[in-house]
Length: 131
Image (spheres, rainbow, N blue to C red):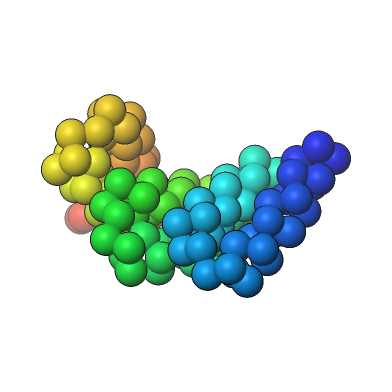
């Protein structure tokens, strides 16, 4: 974890510089990279927050691929925090963009979202059955 914590600190320092210079593309990438680093250390709340910051810039820059990647990062963080319904929605949004962009990530995202849906369905009690 020490190496990743150092990475997060380094990325945050780089983010300060990018913010000072107004380099939006760099800010977006750094927000996303910090989100990935927080995900790696298990801080899914921070991971989501940084991916959401990147997503705002993705939309501002009209970067659909970046938008899909950050939606997917948010989705993974939500799933890890137990918010399966929200994770599915964000994952489906990412999937739509990946498909339009014809990106290889589409298949992985589709499989993962499908597995979340199946897991959610298996936890839903059947209508008319008593426990």
